[in-house]
Image (cartoon, rainbow, N blue to C red; front, top):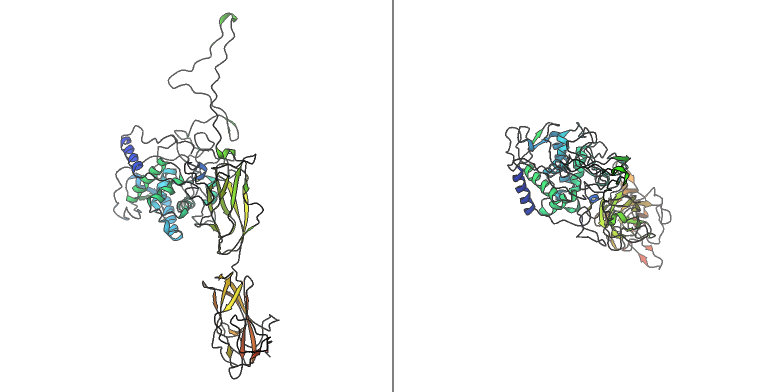
Length: 616
């Protein structure tokens, strides 16, 4: 955020000194190494990591907005007795310290998110207590559990308007869909996501087909995935610090979350929804996540008179506390001098524009190079790059560009993420991490967006094509011979390659064809057996294995003698025709080749002989 107003911890309370000691201890022992780049990501090749530049507010989950600063008691909660343990799962329904109570639905959402991440990203080692710690400082566990049976907050939880007055300046990115403000963005929901982050990080945690930041199940799952990106292992302190700082880029925020994480790990208990303890102190002096319809005891910040939708007028200068306002000096009697005009308040200094403020547009760094294409499972050869420029076309360095994958695709950036944020280098260029094609074929879009300000996005069209092979060979050279009504001794096995490399998981078809010139299915001669033992002369839905191999089922012969052809084709155009011979004595007459020399077996490559089919 643009500025933090300091932590207001237990003012006037007996615990002030104790809390200060706790913060100091945490600051000394848990000082993080802040990562540069995007949301704590490592910057991609070709991008500047800008180590001396702190992360922008628009580049965190929350926009670095306000949060609760109340610390847990120094005395850890005692393990509860009765049903539940008070430690470990922390699900005891019996009484305990009010600070350790978590509303039942909210607690369930945290644990379900942990369970899903244990399967989706087991290397992350996400504890549900971390979600609880963040939920505590962001919204007081959804305002003490003010949620309905589906986990949706009874009223929206909105952060302050991010108009640059005391907080970050983030222009509207969602047209007011999530936060109801079409001029500026606001953090939304029990986990306080800003709309631009929710657009790519949002998840459907309760299976209702929607991604709602106001639903604790959706928000908790989104937070879990957000904290588990970049290959972070949250059992490692450095990775844990980086993940928390990517949520709100503040050392004091990190200390507060870590203190609640440790507290919740010692024991918690479930309380009924709507009865959770509400925090009372915040980083900005107000109440985080206050709904516009409520009137908090302490406002977020001084509110200026409104002069239009989303516009603020200039507030007057209040009198100094304890002193009366000074009246205007009256004119001199007798008309000697006119009344002196009131003193004009000094004009506040103009804040210099940030690099982000100077960006007029983004442009494709490789415009004209054509569409991005890759085979399923491969890495796209071309990396996506976007350049930030001023209106005059001058490059803008040290701004953040977020690349987001949109569309029905399982393609992802390196690391399995659907979004990546990169800092522009001295030439204004940001290069996205390598794009990895999934197994789903078809087209999708990668969109480049400027973080922290709305300018026209740049879209890149990408297409994933099916896995393919350009060559097929038999793995053996034994002649394929059979007597009428018998079974071929050897099964046909082929190997597929693409540009010399193994072609795995490539679709293929095998057909017993009429002749070398006629690729229609033969109605006599060798055949495969179907499930009902009836003859089958075309096999579809074949796929090469991890070594590029396909081993066909056993072949059988009917009573027709002669030379027959088995043709195997793959996606990508690879074709192999294998010769099969059926003779009464188990042998076959040699088939002449173009040179006139006899040939009693197919060539090692499996190519057909020049003799026509005699399957009649």
